[in-house]
Length: 174
Image 1: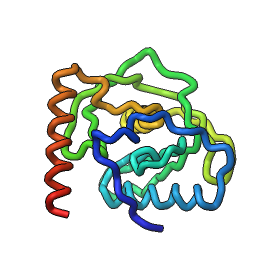
Image 2: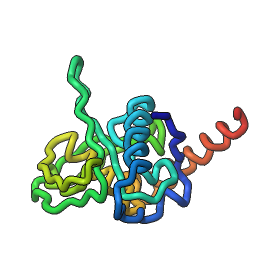
Image 3: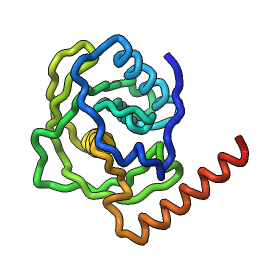
């Protein structure tokens, strides 16, 4: 397993719709393991393949954050929301591709998601709370959508300028 670099917004690869995964190869299973390692190292609770510059419909997540909680990682190929509640939840979201930036986003409070696991088995589960927010956030990445796309244009522009400045500073240091 290895830690991979995470793209920083703005980057055109973050705005592309990811390609469906037709066959879960050994290489894609290793990618899922690398993504989990990268996510834990960042640290974060979710990561999508497009954030690594890869056009695969693959996300990983683990929202078990409480002190002493055992890790509960998910790796999902071709995840899709098949049901969402009418109830909404507001959660302060952040993103590993938009470091140190947070904003409140309204999403369905509960969702049912269908996906293929790394073994190739079809899965379906209901997610609530932070898990529901996280899985929707990561699936958005597969559609080329970022959490800042839910914000008003001025706020989105300010965040984009902040990220452009951060990228310039990191380039100068490197």
